[in-house]
Image (cartoon, rainbow, N blue to C red; front, side, top):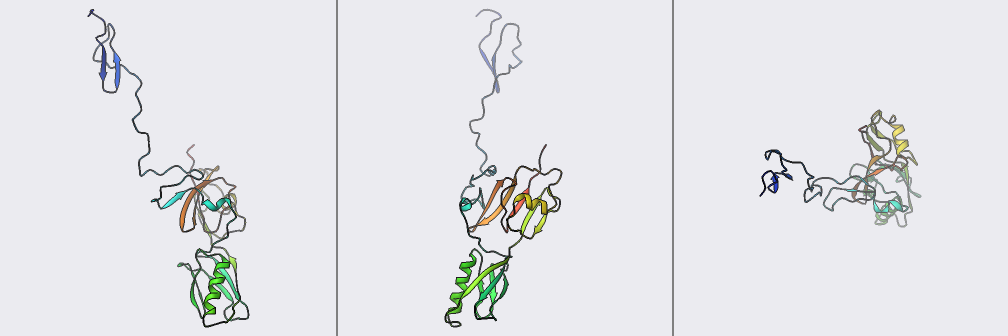
Length: 224
């Protein structure tokens, strides 16, 4: 070995290099560091909000709009909806009813009728079926929605809270009802939390996206 030449590669932890003539062996040389073997997120880290990206099956909420969002979907009833139930020829049964916190309506004669998750036509069928058993021979029932359940808006808006639903509402309309975007509100995209088919969905949408009764709209804070 010739005096002054490098004696071979030198390892100093993460730094790998070689010593040349005149360099001090106690000074590590910098080199590129390879990435760790796994760059996957931790198991408990939530996935980013993206259109259609799904959470694992065991998670309490799915990230992405419900599968039926792309198709025409009948409105399903839930707590807070106010209904007009008409039983033809029966003035004592025809009245307005509110779907209570348990998802039922309470009617004379037949008592509590489950409404949550049913369409108005489906609920009319349930009421008729109960009336047919010992009360009315051929009942004719119609159910109309008098007032939709409220929606909720949270985050960076002027007045977060609960508001009555307005037909054909979009995120932009909902934000305007809540006093507009706050000074730090992110204006390009919001998060909607929605219950559909017995599951809870959470997804990111633009401000032109339609809001449905019972939705929770969250305006996130911008970081720049």
